[in-house]
Image (tube, rainbow, N blue to C red; front, side, top):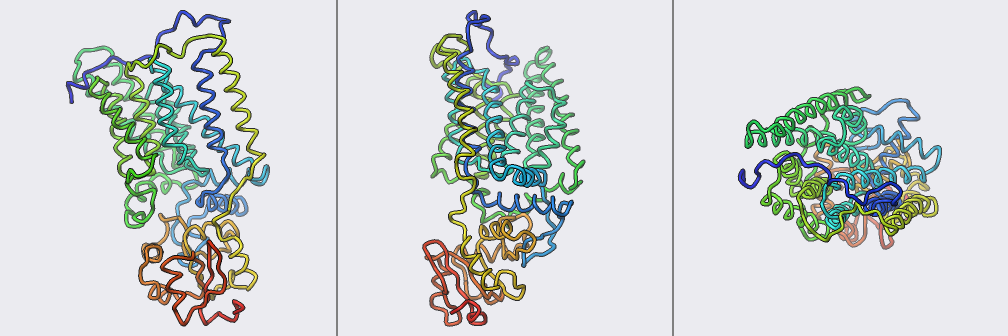
Length: 498
């Protein structure tokens, strides 16, 4: 592969076109870019429905009310006080502040801005493409993977941090920007170590470039810049400890990776099955990258893209970031697709710019006009039903439910919630997660409910759990609909009104 990756001098944006004259109007690329930014605003400003967001918002409320970031579990009946690293504490605080000042509309606007800014940075990074058609295709691939994954949660902070770190490694931003970027990133999402992965791979790539072209001043300069970026990456990563989590916040992502058993049943931590359109679009991005390698791509660009790109095969949650790095690297190759470069200044380009600006404005203005949160698919009525009968806040009553129900219960009752489990798989003891997974997959329902001393089960109909409850002489299903059922053990059947 060394021959295929022969050193290529540091790429620069395409040269100025002669048609880029003052007063000639906007560039074609500017208008198209704004249209993509508008798409990002719409994607980011979508109605809130992610289950983990519910717990993040509940935690932000708790931090504002108590003045401190919890270090142990405050929401469950099964793991009270269990060590818990609130990696996204800053995002949670921002959510709670916005809720108190602007209701949920402010949170959605924040998400819209985060995704729109991410798209803007990616479009900027794609400007090395020699054809506007290539640039559009690359952005289409990015959106084809990311649009279904960029849900309203702290992940969006990590997404923007990632593309800004990529901009630093692409020589678009001064490496010193990594200090504030990594500090904010480290207080809002646990993916910040990816900046170190990129910087390390870029440094190794720059070293390989210099080795393949000894004495080349460009290769020497690239290596020096890569070392400088690495130094500021280390400084920025170390700055993460300057927060309420201290060293726990710095080492939490590493600790999370050691809990493979806890993440085993989580869909986003599983490798892609390539049975979803999003997975297939990622495959196209990776194959295109491999083709670009054969066409000659500098190690400085190829190695970070290869390392991050391969993580997409390890877990679904990595697909969006892997696709971004792959497409940015590939766009630097001199692909030819049409004659338009995007630098053309024509009346059409000015019209597209105006259309794009209007689309961005409409995308942001549409946020207050639509529903801010969608709790359809969550047992809101069922929790109220249990609360009306005094079962929800009774410490002597054990309620077994699915993880998503736990997220809703945390938002509903805060620290008064008594979850059996929620989606904080990094926090719960493995035996709790194993029992939850067995219930979902059809394990020994009776043995688990008996061992846990369950009094009430809030679950879904048409499942192995509901089938077992229907035939158990000790249990009675007291209420059911298309989405949820409530079953009570004979110990509390009178309190359930049956």
